[in-house]
Image 1 (tube, rainbow, N blue to C red):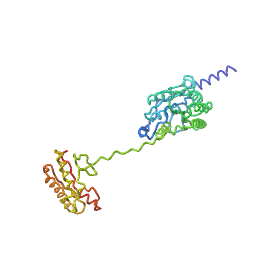
Image 2: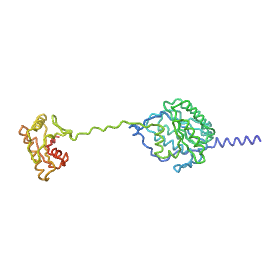
Image 3: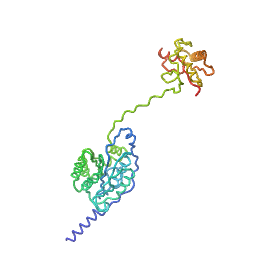
Image 4: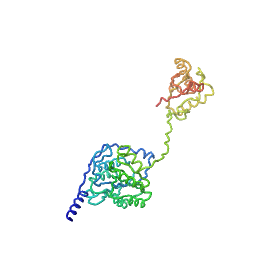
Amino acid sequence: MKKNILLTTTLAAVLVSGCATQAIQSFQAFQPEDLTPQVKSGRLVQKTNSFFVVNDSSSSMGGTYLGSSDYKGAKLDVEKDLLNKINRTIPAIPLSSGLLSFGFGSCLSWGSTLLNQPLQQYSTGGFDAVINSLHCASGGTPLADALSVANDDIKAANGNIALIVLSDGMDDASAVPAAEALKNRYGDRLCIYTVWVGNEADAEGQANLDQIATVGGCGFATDAASLSSTQGAGNFVKKVFFKEGHPAPVTPPPAKPKCSNAPKGAIVDKDGCWSFHGVLFDFDSDKIKSRFHPAIENAVEVLKLNPGLTIEIEGHTDGIGSVAYNLKLSERRAMSIKNELVKQGVDPKRLTTVGYGKSDPVASNDTEEGRAYNRRVVYKRTDQ
């Protein structure tokens, strides 16, 4: 009888501890959400400085995952795929990371936990390697032991810590006391996030993980299906690692002036253009009134200060009248300015004239004020 009991016990140990389900080493095609622009703009502000993953590598994770059509394979494969998505979504921020797996048997060097990566400086490539170290699943589900061991594994963590638990939650014993011990030790620095990777038959396990997340106070519980998409993984990373920021409004650069080549000493208009914007012609007139002579004198002074300067004098009209008539009127206005400049000593070879008629209004022709501003002369440099 004793021999039979011993044989039964031995067989059970072999079945529970020694038989291992091998994990695949490939992942789903995945395009991560790019969070970098939101980080740089200040919309996302880093709140977590270290994250430590506690991954279920027990024999139950060797079972086929049925929780979502997005995944095929063992539950351990789903865990690895989720970690890959999280890893690829985390933007370039300063972090520490580590990973502890739990189960029993050959997959964990015949212990109930295995420290796959001690807490160290995080990098995408480095964490990718530790994900691939999860090569098989075996043994029971000692999550309580894993959380107790993690209590010391994260003691070197700086700042705020995210403890991320991936499991089907079908624990050998309640892990809530171990989670409470963690929270008591690290207080507000620690938030616990659980990801249920289970099937309908594992509903009890989901409830267990919900309890553990509640102990953390500032974390939350979710499931594999919620993290499977680009948006789902992105939302998880944002909630675990960041808080919402309030970036200062972006002040648009000042508008560049339409004209940036006004010569030395020139009077410019509101657009930075060298213009007689104050020299207004009466309706149907090309006569320069005496009160605008100071503007003419300024033009003469500018031409003296800039001996290499040559200009085109552009004449304009308002919108009243025919195209042909206004074209001739604008030419006469440009010529009247040229004649006045030549009269005051400017070499006529430095001056050309052109009329644009009513084709280029700068104000509305529906009002008298707008039409008056359109009856203008503009200078354009021709030496550049």
